[in-house]
Structure formats: structure tokens, C-alpha cells
Length: 303
Image (cartoon, rainbow, N blue to C red; front, side):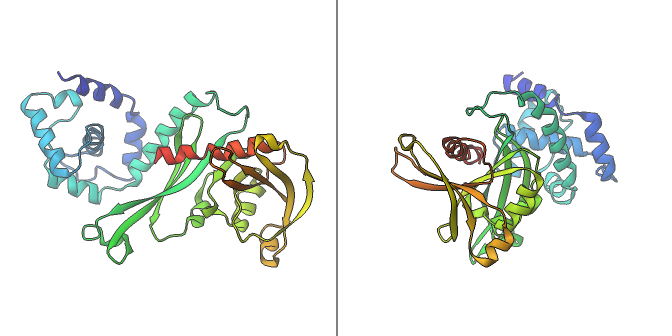
């Protein structure tokens, strides 16, 4: 038997069948199903992902090849599923079944990485939050209209940087502005959220993150209007140009974020670029704030 099929079978043993069956029953996923159950569908789609298949016909051809060599059984799949049967299941089955299974698996895996070392010597949970646009064929997915001749969706992901595990994923239309995705993130008290300046919305930063006892680190927009309340001493040899407590001066912005916050100006000696980081965390050194934002790159690697 092919070694890859052995590995796949071992991987699928980690799927908790009892929890999965409870989720299927909750959404009546197997109601009036004759052959391709929800678990069979999961196995087939996971095998397709594992084997890097690009189309339903490619999946069908691979299943037929495994059936001829009597290896399909070892993958846990009972028969070679026709591509039209799989297409119908993918279209009609309730997506929440597999979304909830994903959350079950994440809850099981996260404790295994909770004590992993982090590059920075901090105890807080650190999350990176960003989005990536996935291009789609507009003829096949007319519901995903993005531009005149282009289709797409946007994948917003909250990544736990201890283990690089996604803990929250939101799919939206590609035209939806990034800041709207902040309304759905899972905010934990004491956690640090690293977000790109495309997500900067002072009302959401204050009400969703700050008021819930969490922290944000992001970049200031070029048009941010503020005044300096006080300045802290810095070691410019580290690249930190300034470390200041500021408050917003524009009336509309002051109403959205009435508190003072911190702005760290940092120069990357390797590139010569200067960054303005804003955060509501007042405890860490200025260099740590800059290094924290550098960790946001991990979500780009995840995409």
C-alpha cells in the first residue's frame, strides 16, 4: 500500500467522530442521504487537499485509480465518488457542519502549542489579524463579483502566533472594507492584536479591543491628527526615534477614541523605512512594540 495513503489514514484518525456525528445530527446533514454521508464527503475532500487535486474530475480520476488498485478502502472511503455526486454535496450540504468541526479541532490543538516559546519575551497571547483576497472565476461564481471582469472573496484570519494556528476565519465579499471584519473577532482580555493600518477605525479599536481589556498594535494613518501629551526617553541606537503619549485632536476622532494612547516612531536600519506604530499598551519598551508589529508578517506567510 502506498505510504501516502497510510499517512492520510493516520491523520484522519484524529477527527473526533463523536463530536462530528453530533454536529451532523444538529444540522441534519445526513437527512435522506443514500451513499455519500457527511463523513464520506469530509474524507474525500481532505484526501483531495492532501493530494493537491485541482478539480472535481481530478478527484474522481484519483478515486477510480485507488479503487482499481484496491487502496481506496485503506483511506476509509467506501467507493469512488462520481464528480457530479460530490459537486451536489458540496453545493447543498450545510457549511456550518464543517465550520464547527474546524472549531472543535482548533480547540483540541491550541493547548498543545500554548506553552511554545515566542520570539519576544512576553506572556500575553499575541494574535495577528489580516485579510487576503482570493480570486475566483466570475463565470463560475457570479455571486462573487468583485470588479467588472473579476470575481473574488476576502479571507479575514485571526492567527494565534504561538503555533501559527487560525482561531477565527471570516469570508466576505472582496469589496467589503477590512474594518468591518473587526466586528466579529474573538477578543480575549490581556491579548495583543497586531493589525494592519487598513483595519484602523478608532471607534472599533476603542470599543471592541480597548474596552474589553485587550491591546492593539498597528500603524498610524498619514492623515491622523493628534497632539503630544508627553514624551519618554529613547535609545536611538535601537532604531526608536520617539516614544510619545498622544491624543487625537480632530473632533470626530476624539469622540470615537477619547483616551490617550501611545505612538512609537521607529526606523528600520536595514531598509531606511520609518514607521509610526500606535498602541494602547503602555508597559512594554518601545523597541518591543516595534518588534511585535514585525511578528504580524507571520499571517502573510500563513496566507
